[in-house]
Length: 145
Image 1 (cartoon, rainbow, N blue to C red):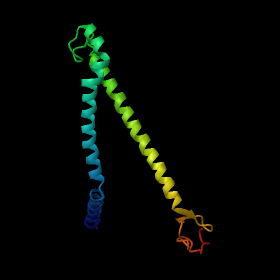
Image 2 (image 1 turned 135 degrees about the vertical axis):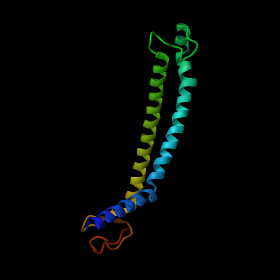
Image 3 (image 1 turned 90 degrees about the vertical axis):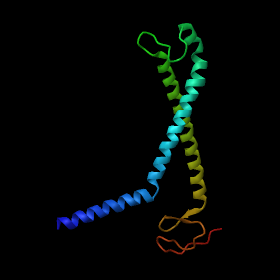
Image 4 (image 1 turned 180 degrees about the horizontal axis):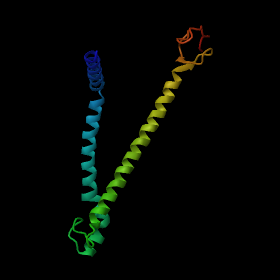
């Protein structure tokens, strides 16, 4: 008995794993990780090589440091710390703009979907606008103009 139930459990696990891989979840995750890593390097370079030196150049020169990494006060590496803060703010801003754009796109998509459907006057289910019979309660519907 225990041998059979462990086989069934193993088969169920393997089937679940195959479904997970085949449905693309793992590929979507892998693509997101690779794209996130590449995006992180671009943002890091933008901050380290362009934005931070432009903003902090006068302070770095006044402190006598040659570059951002050399700007140290006591044991505190202020240059790197400020660079990381600026990096965080830029990444947060970009992510915020992306989330906002996706929300706007989703709202548009929902409006378009709503224009293609209507409610059944009998069971209040959502059905295609051209339907003459409800697929849920099978009621005959009046023609849509």
